Image 1 (cartoon, rainbow, N blue to C red):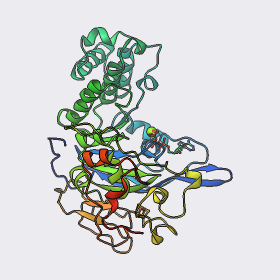
Image 2: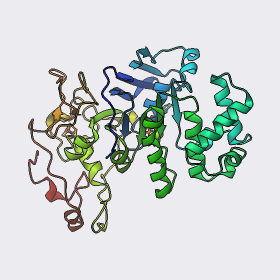
Image 3: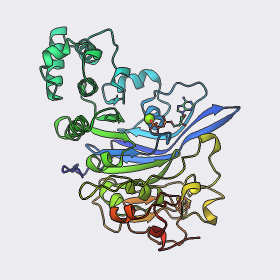
Image 4: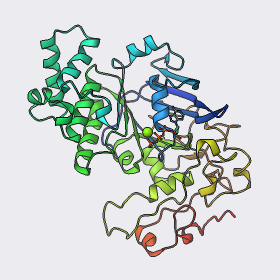
Length: 390
Ligand SMILES: Nc1ncnc2c1ncn2[C@@H]1O[C@H](COP(=O)(O)OP(=O)(O)OP(=O)(O)O)[C@@H](O)[C@H]1O
Ligand code: SF4
Ligand SMILES: [Mg+2]
């Protein structure tokens, strides 16, 4: 878990409420992101986690105003320092992007133009926002590259993107994103393409951004291990909807949603013998075109019961959700549209069969190794003996 903790602030830096994104297809609107709400505090790191296709990038691109597909419909609210991003004119958004909100992408090659040197591109980014001479901009570029741990930064600045290793390109991209001191950095899978050692270095760098630059980070990943090491708060997306959200420590200690529990069970153990196989969640998320009427996780969930099927669980209503509040051990709360709680720090949008029935305890890896037959969630059948819902 991250060692540093953010100082408490009153207003969040980013306050997203009921964000929905739909694309037109075959004559109808297909919801891709539905009722997503979260807040991100100053100098906070929030992890947006979920399987491929769960809508992580679409959420980020919608916040950045970067979705230009014809007919796209974006509703809800995203207040950045009190300014509404949803529906903000592009001219205004362009001013915010780069200066106050920056984004780094999984593949740095998409951010850099191959025909110019890394240094030239960072210089230009700096000069687009600040009145600096070329020489001054280059000095700032070299300084930034050095801060990002790039060896021999002056020479590296004169290299073309293809001449750098993946790790160096990623550092250069973070340098470019930070060149204008953004308050919010959105990092979309920044380490997925990198080997484990470089991945750890980049995550260290991201963690240090809040102390050195005062930045908040929205970190998008499909890797719960990355979230555990890096994020103060975590939001689990499943098929475009929030499955669970809360302080990382509480959520990892007491997952309230069967999907979160299954994701956690698939993290390799840090110590002890490695199990001969890690549990996977059987099946795949539904295509947005074929989402079931009820809970989208139902086809893969051992807990599924009658009330899960006719309609999705109530939308998450995190009114009063304070990601900066101190984690509480027994903080897991079921969210109810009828009676949203104002105090809890963790939310699970899941209607477990009997209210208050806790999920079974997390399995030890020896138990996992012992059971060869996984059930619908990827757990051995014995793991669901307690509180069997069917
Ligand atoms: N412009 C678009 N038009 C229509 N559908 C889209 C568009 N962009 C994304 N989608 C769909 O939205 C869904 C979510 O995509 P998104 O890229 O946000 O997933 P993701 O969670 O970032 O996945 P990954 O981990 O693979 O990056 C996918 O089913 C994708 O096909
Ligand atoms: S118990 Fe029902 S609502 Fe909860 S995850 Fe399973 S199918 Fe969805
Ligand atoms: Mg993505």
